[in-house]
Length: 432
Image (cartoon, rainbow, N blue to C red; front, side, top):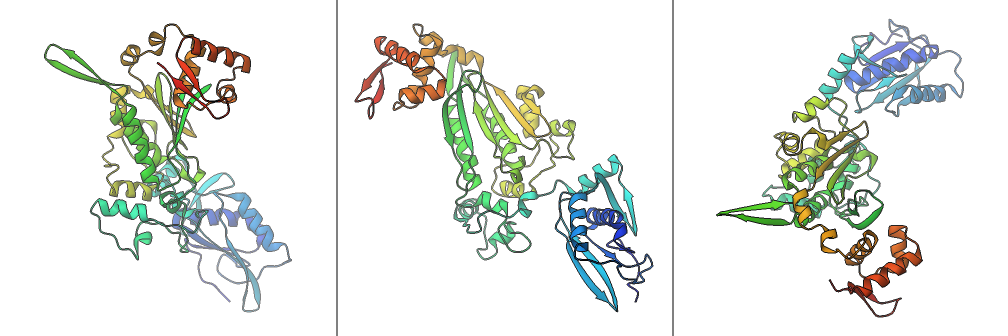
């Protein structure tokens, strides 16, 4: 019996003694065509000779070797087949997470040969395929999803939808018809938490406020953050002669671009949402995953796009959240310089300094001249939540109970606060 010739999708091995070579061939075929088949028990010319020394562990050993060798991991179909009177092992695998490595090296298929890829060839392969779209291949943890909010956004943008094919058209399902992780992100309800956290001072030692906007369709949560940040970007008016000049704490257009980029390009597959941190002197927009592997820093600053989540990007574009002109990063660089970006293998942080002149005009220390730093911190916490108790202040500041009680007495004596009601169920009244 003869199976014909080896091809770019089919490889023959005489036995499992060539398992390492077989794993390399499988990775090369995945990189070239997204699928491949390796037969053990077949000569190079296609003659079936059968796999010798078969035992109960043979198939398990092949599976283990593939799991150890190929990254990202794949789940192959390994079967024992009878061809004529000979037993052969057929290994078939399919995958979209290009590029695949075999034992730490990268290969591609050229007819019936496995060729190692140079760094330049590997970069070309990634550029051709783009970053793997993990969130459309990863299963949602919840398969009971609805999309009323998402459909409403399409309708409100005058985009006609087909109710029956809506989920398929947007790529909300895997190849086997189950909801993917992108569907979970865009569903009416989910467990994704997006935080905007305000700290007192220049570090994370004292948290003043934490607002969460997740738990619903990602697009609405993203917009909620934009609305909140725009609301706190207070306008101050300077009048000089006949000119009227408005000043804000930060450039909102730069924040918007940084925030949308973080939400679209973060590696959602790792389920670490982007976040916004607000300090006394700056705003930080943090996204997970670093730059796409095919994108250099030079390309990044030039506005070149290599999206990590291609289908999610299309949905953002459909609904006019972004315009895909590539002007976002250059805009931030123009307003704040390249120093606004911290880029590592796993993280991108965009830092937008707050308007120092504007801040100087409302500096709390100039307003509360008779308060020390500790008193200002406690007063700020009370303004954020007037039901805080001594135990809450202790958790938020690491001050001792006796020191906090001393601060509260001082604030009451200076007529900044007044206690209303009992200690258990009462609240603080801020007097000035």
